[in-house]
Image 1 (cartoon, rainbow, N blue to C red):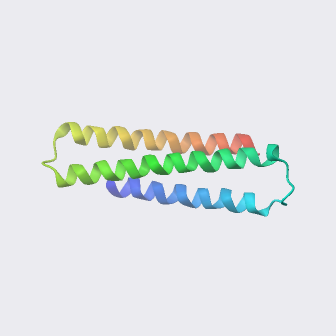
Image 2 (tube, rainbow, N blue to C red; image 1 turned 90 degrees about the vertical axis):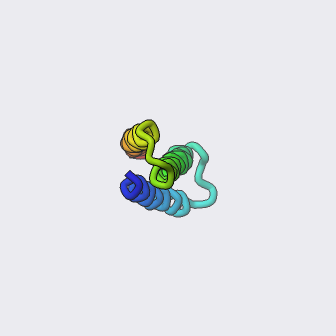
Image 3 (cartoon, helix red, strand yellow; image 1 turned 120 degrees about the vertical axis):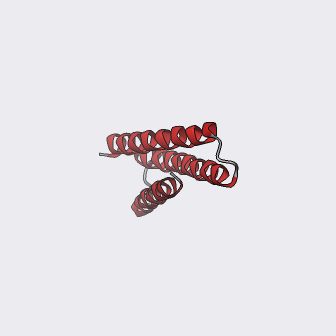
Length: 98
């Protein structure tokens, strides 16, 4: 879970970079209504990245502690939420921008 959460976080950072680069390609006088979906997607990406960091942190705590079962279950729940969040992010940004 530790490695997978870090890997998903890396993918989300790549996605965030694409969104930021896309916003940068628009002219300076582009209306906010055009840029809003990209900006919302970028901030949502930051939130999903934060969730991946939380999953990594809890995984590290589980490894460093006595490896209690409840903490392992928490890691699994966080990772599952992370996967759902990544799917939701991809779907929402695609719907808003395409």
